[in-house]
Image (cartoon, rainbow, N blue to C red; front, side, top):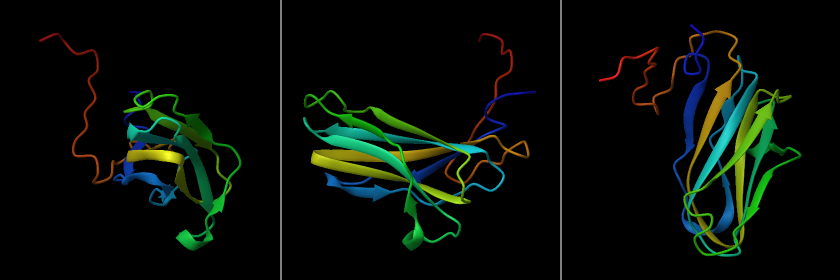
Length: 147
């Protein structure tokens, strides 16, 4: 059966940050056996004028000190005090040239609270994919009957 859950790995890679400006990073994601990863950054309270940027970094070794910025990003400038509250920035990193990657979130100009970052690795070389410990439970419903 072809379905998404058997072919992707879903991981929470950042538990959230304070309501402030600054630069924040996800955990490092090992891309061995996957073609790409989608990073999803969810924000809570976002002040008007806050500039939110989601980008990615990579390196050949699993070491935070060596991560290099990649070209391209998802950026949004909040136009009022609630316009970006509870919204997402999404970045798809397809076929990175190094094995280890991570997300980078920059909150500039005005404060915003980063609630979390989720990584969805896709294009698995081997299925089914085992979900990490941050996924409490998962299930697939195939042509389910109504209850």
